[in-house]
Length: 560
Ligand code: HEM
Ligand SMILES: *[C@@H]1O[C@H](CO)[C@@H](O)[C@H](O)[C@H]1NC(C)=O
Ligand SMILES: *[C@@H]1O[C@H](CO)[C@@H](O)[C@H](O)[C@H]1NC(C)=O
Ligand SMILES: *[C@@H]1O[C@H](CO)[C@@H](O)[C@H](O)[C@H]1NC(C)=O
Ligand SMILES: *[C@@H]1O[C@H](CO)[C@@H](O)[C@H](O)[C@H]1NC(C)=O
Ligand SMILES: *[C@@H]1O[C@H](CO)[C@@H](O)[C@H](O)[C@H]1NC(C)=O
Image 1 (cartoon, protein in one colour):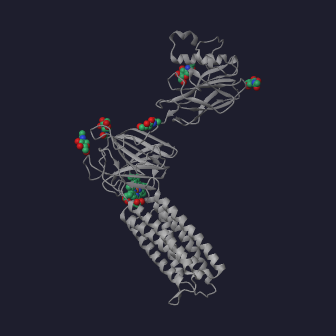
Image 2 (cartoon, protein in one colour):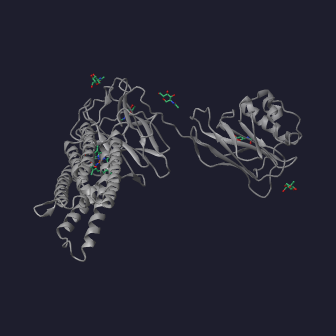
């Protein structure tokens, strides 16, 4: 009997004591305000002892782990048809006597109590009406998150019948990972994209670090974090090319937990699974789609043909989707510009874009932002305004249009070949798909133009429409392709390349509207179209503006 063992009181006994006391007094406190009893641990008189049979009530939770910040929902249920009139619920670390965390209410039938002088550490009933279901929330505030937690409740069925010690199953703590720039260049090697981004501040920051734990050069603490719904990974390589690399991967498993894997790549193909080796203190988490992992490894970096230790390696970072716990082709990857000795704390610089990719971008931009836009404007608006101007018997606008468009398409073809000569393998990136579409439609446009029927042909309007619509589609796709292309090479923190491109689109649109209005006006007034100044001035302004945007973007590409 509890009350006789007060002399050898243990923490557990005090708790049981308290519960017995509280439930026994539920009748005096039918409103459930048993807080005063929480603090004065004296057993008030109680004529009845708790039931020893299996309680017809349960305590369950909506999850089997807990983390800081996340709410756990706790359910109190009557198993059969017999309801309960009173209850008290607390949370505690398994095997420890103190209430932990804090509760929140989800129903009016319950109220918060401050047991052990800590706010909201218990929940009880508000009246003695029959109840079969109670739902409350709980947060692990102030907990170290090292020990499992469970919920304990007492239920009162009626005047004489009550059960104590009804417990939920155990909730294990999910270790949280805290990755920050603290120590970068001082005690650890840091590599991130965008350069110098801080994962504690930015949700768009891919970050990895390596820190020597002792001066033996063998124990290294690694961290990696970044937004992904699949996996994030880093690897060590002799070169900037994927293949023959030692890779660590943090991947979201099917149970939405994060697992650490190791892999070895044999080429630009799915890396092979590799034993994790001597890895300890693995901490992983995924919160709001940001994967974080940290671990300590005594593995030497494994690359074929390199038995030496203390060598320098290129660091690679890649992230992408996963299916069934297996990584898929990366959405994005970046490599260090130099080989890095991870025993020397430093900020790692990302390798620039290959020259050939820069050339591809520069050529495309130059072609489309000068010739392409000009050809467009000429065909859409100058056609009507410069009808009488002829050269060698052909309309002037027509010659200009054909000329600049041919140059644009030729440049596109060259740039297209350049990109493929670098990548060599097709990848389903938005940019590649858009680029190919632009290429195909441009070719179609050229073929249509060559095979068109004469201007007087009754079906000529078909060509005119198809040519115009295809032209607009090509232009829209090309602009989108440029955006996606710039996105891939723009690693600046504020994405200024994208913003400049946005500015260009606005400028372009502005002049379209201007030309549209002007051509309508000249049509109604009649002779404005023949005034060359009214055409030349806006066109040169437009062209000059285009060139300014172009030069800015080219500088950006050069810097990437
Ligand atoms: C399913 C798995 C993977 C496949 C199929 C794959 C395939 C490829 C292919 C085809 C390329 C060349 C085209 C491009 O640049 O996109 C490439 C490049 C690259 N991959 Fe992977 N990869 C995989 C996983 C990884 C992982 C886990 C890493 C982690 C470090 C990684 C790092 C890189 C890097 C740094 C490059 C750029 C260097 C280069 O062009 O070789 N890859 N990968
Ligand atoms: C509460 O439930 C008990 C047992 O089912 C029943 O005997 C009693 O009448 C109920 N009381 C009220 C107020 O409904
Ligand atoms: C209460 O439950 C704990 C574990 O769940 C058990 O060790 C203890 O003996 C129980 N006490 C009573 C009085 O049932
Ligand atoms: C995370 O780490 C930083 C720096 O090491 C520290 O200031 C911060 O308090 C830590 N946060 C948590 C929740 O541990
Ligand atoms: C660790 O590596 C550094 C540089 O690579 C070297 O200078 C140092 O001697 C090494 N220390 C040990 C204990 O191997
Ligand atoms: C793994 O690490 C432990 C402790 O650092 C060490 O005692 C053990 O020899 C290592 N095992 C291997 C295979 O490297």
